[in-house]
Image (tube, helix red, strand yellow):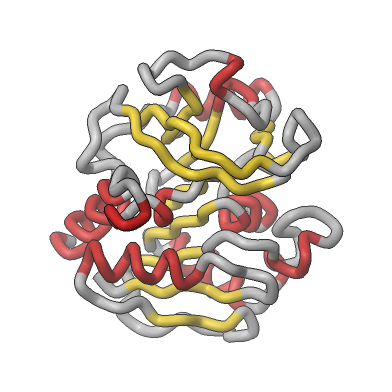
Length: 232
């Protein structure tokens, strides 16, 4: 699996993401700068990691979405390339129009830094191949603007096309308001593009890929990508 991680000013999770991808695939991802205008040949996956691109000025991800490299990322996605955006990366994908909806301020108006539980809703994708629908895993969240929102028609379309990838839930898998600490509508933690090759999610599975960190519950996402994209 040939992967690349895009760096923007203020991004801070690129090393965590690189370790997760390398652990899953055995190959170190390339690092790309936001001012680049082209992607390397032969890429299977582009990743937009978490952090605070451009200090979250204007809106989270809004300035990064105008970076030169996003034109190449859009073209890559249009050709059927796989793209993963985590936390700030999810915000950038929404601002760039690669995913529907927006990430608003958390309902508490407070930054949330804690573990949460996610239920797998869309099985069989390149990102969820090693999970079954209804599986639950734990992942850290670290965001102030993770409150996913979209209009009713968009939400119904996402539901009808099975493009809600993950929902916030209890450890037992119950989707309840109490389990959705940031207030995201319908407990949505991650969504897929129409071709199911672009995924954005708010929590950080890349921080649960090593027993030294207390959990490997995020590894299935990266192993799913590695197995799918190597096979392709």
